[in-house]
Image 1 (cartoon, rainbow, N blue to C red):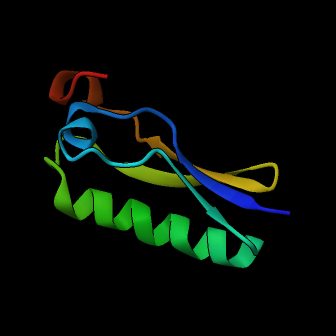
Image 2: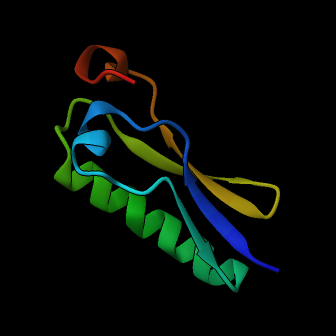
Length: 76
């Protein structure tokens, strides 16, 4: 079984960098660890006007955009 880490919506920052939206892993632990690291990387390398957070959904992980100024900062 594969476990996935999915970016919920690609903002303009992600689209400009041609960021992939889904990454797959063979273990749930590996996917979980990667989801937190990936969200942290996005928070530290993108425009800083919005934030990313990892949320477990069933056996997968979704990197969601935190509430706040996301819509003002980037186009979806």
